[in-house]
Image (cartoon, rainbow, N blue to C red; front, side):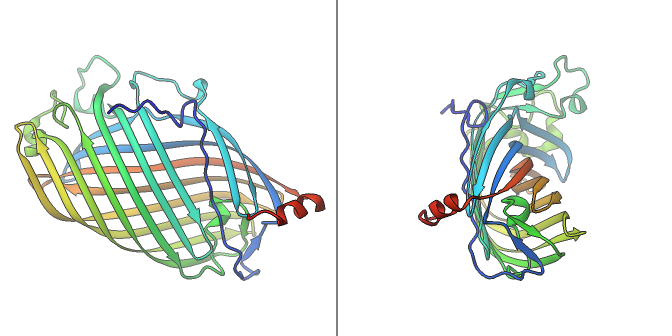
Length: 339
């Protein structure tokens, strides 16, 4: 099935993010939910597929994803953002056409973070075409037949929630005024699939390097496992911040490979998954400027247990937020709404 829905190009993106109103340590976190937050932003979402042999000889497929420009607002715990992929931000550069539906919902509560991914991409280009074939005449080797599906749910409990804030860099309605960190504990569930009309490995490469992966036409994987991690916000002069968050799972489940010769191989695998959140910028009562990055993914062993297939998805976003005091009439109106 070909996907014609483009949420990042000519689409409207709605994102709902909220935090609960539980008690926080005011020495560490300054809550700004009584202000109106207006933002402009640019963002890019992606899903990548990489085939390699023990981390080398990588075949790096990427979609011709869309960079969007948008505006939005946050009132108390409710955020609404609208974005559009303007043409001047998205030069094609011989990367072909990608059809995609990309929904990444991130819910930032006081004591937990939940992520939901639904990423459906059709049409990729080989990012390292020249490295694999110096004589290739076009800028990139195109794979319009390659489609990737990533469905996932992630939950992380934040133990030090009264002193550590995920909302400060990612929702922008709080300020982390002192450095603090927190251990994380939760779980993840992923379903991934990648399919092509031919082999995952381009015909012009040395197929013998990639072993029986060269014969793989499609794979599907369902994996689930508990997650542990740690997050830390480094703050300088109450306003400059650098946040890093890493979590690790050893995803366990079934992986099924379908080959060009019609054979099917189903395996039980245990594979590492690293989730990452990064952010840096300036955060004050009057305004916010920050860059954030999120990524989830998994690495699967190949049919021969030597090669690897990695599928990952995420987003990069630059936000500028201006904060305003709300009038008494507006606050009275908000008090009547479940925000």
